[in-house]
Length: 485
Image (cartoon, rainbow, N blue to C red; front, side, top):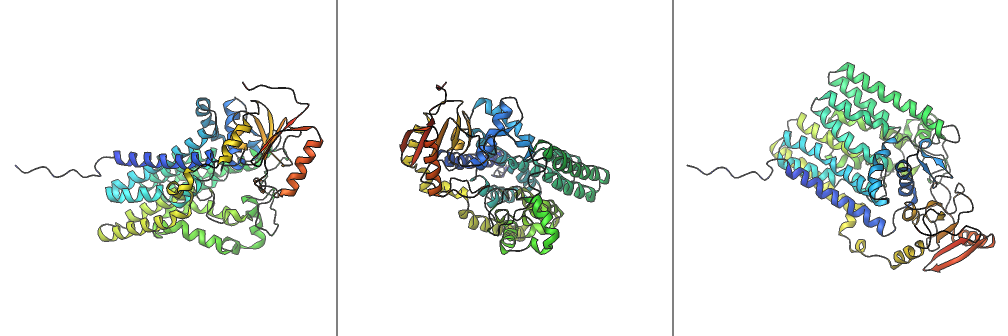
């Protein structure tokens, strides 16, 4: 009697979930470590924690970082963030948002890897899952705060996996919640609907596309203007200052309006846009271009490349996050459609792995293997010692990197921002960081201007409580005494 064949190491699906778990640990470790080192910022972690804290406390979201009592549903339509509130009840802090984001991104690996395993085999699924999980768009996003579009990533992965397998109803059901993630994603739903219609279910496809279009129109022209104090969507206006820095009202929709004047050449110039587009497709060895699923990326690419904000054109921050599940789903779909196997399949997989690993050191996820990541600046302990003097519930203005450390227990705005609540009870400023993050959305505050403003604060009712290692802590002498709870 012959021995049974050796068990394939890729038998079952446990290893896919193990891979997703390992990626979750990596994502969370990077994000949490950056927060521990005070390298997170008011824009955007501070804003999003204020949003989640509002939901957790049972009221519509406001952000003191955006402005005094600013209603965030007038800035971006992202009610999906209410889902984070129950986790915030368990752990009140920015760490909750970072862990939730890591989990959302890690979960998105599973549908893509399972699809690849079923159609291309276990080894191919392992390579594609790892390349997706380590792709530069994800690697960049986990190193820059928290963003609502993290919810879109698993929704897109599940929707496009279903679409690639002709489970059209499932594809629509996974796509429609994108309407509650961000206002522009309704246009992504439109493209998914059109692909569904092309795949054979015309009625379902047109319904999905119509729902996506109506959702975006409703958000852009009714909900956002209704909540915004200005009575309009803040990002319609376009500020061209010639510097490439973001303007106060610059944004994606403004870029689209400006495109009518500048022509379609704006989509591909300057060179940063071409470089980004090439880098988006490169991890798939450009094979994603052979799949109709790639059309789903079009709305995101259009609003980014027509924006006047140069930060939208490049590969930094979180802007390419939603593109990663799209291009990798298109990669799998193209491989399956071509019937790729054997040596040809191995060439594509080796190419994808090589490009992913070559690009990865340029992005935040690579910090896990850098010694400096695990060293803590002694100033961090000093900052926390001084922040402990600020009582819970106090009204505060603070420097950019200090805001996310205070959101969970104070009402905090950004120091030097014109929209911040005036006459806070406490002010804490890091005088060794000249910009303090105020370059977004306003102009940077120079060191001299900051010193002048601090001196003015002391002349107009603030006492110096402490000054150490570049941190200055002021308290308004007429503020009522408070005690930490």
